[in-house]
Length: 371
Ligand SMILES: NC(=O)c1ccc[n+]([C@@H]2O[C@H](COP(=O)([O-])OP(=O)(O)OC[C@H]3O[C@@H](n4cnc5c(N)ncnc54)[C@H](O)[C@@H]3O)[C@@H](O)[C@H]2O)c1
Image (tube, rainbow, N blue to C red):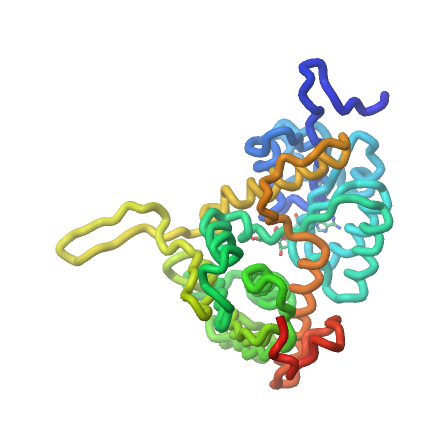
């Protein structure tokens, strides 16, 4: 039976999404799609760990479960996929999904290297499907408000930018030995790189210098494990940025962004879980956010709502209801941030500043008077 894009109420048919990878992040996205994203349906889940995918599907009322992502890609009733598998599968899954005509939301990073990512993005382009990367911070209220201020020129010409990630921890990192190499750049700081690029709109990252170490788990230093990093970034407009990350903040999940410029400063980031404060003989205290899915619950929902909206608009040939203010991180954003993460890896290996690959020759280091 042909897939009907309008139901009898006159409302558009829901966007039918297949989830590929139902681990920590995928399971949360599954719940968001099934319970919180209007006009979207979680139609199927693919995960080689079929047992846990089935348990998730049962809890959310999802009909189809498979151990093989190809089943989702071959399903004519599925409009779009959300990819939340391990990173090493991302580029090939994006390419396969696009070739199958599915719109793609992919968790970050969209690939492990620029060559495989470029092939995937070429497949997206050739198929004409919608592509979104999971840079969820853009959807957080405070980051959006900061972006609007920056677009209005509140900070003037950017001079210094800062973005940081402190993941929650208890002073040691469980399963640290199994964390893939370079995760701190490819999966953690890549969020910060996107925030900095988004805040410094119109400028290109030209050069990075990354310093990283195992300070939480020094016993794993010899194996190349990294849990702490600081990156300085030079941009084509002359601005200098710092991105930093650590995998074990005892006080919770701490995400911030800041732009300092010729006219002032704009900051984003929420230090407390709620606006409530406790005042006692010891002083003042407040609860802090503990997990990404607490701090960014609404942002994770809104990024998927934005995706579903864009897919519906493209599928049904109607204008998207997204706000006039563009948030959606797409192919160029995915590529730019990955190029920075890869340059950081090279920088650590060489212990030297490294040019960000893939930039036009005119944006070479030294050309700092630009835009
Ligand atoms: N945006 C964010 O804030 C955020 C937070 C955490 C993780 N992530 C990203 O989400 C992705 C997944 O991370 P995670 O922490 O959920 O990992 P995870 O290990 O918890 O889950 C990965 C899942 O993928 C499944 N899988 C393995 N191979 C597969 C394949 N070929 N096809 C389909 N599924 C497959 C595994 O069985 C597992 O269930 C990563 O890209 C990570 O960077 C994003």
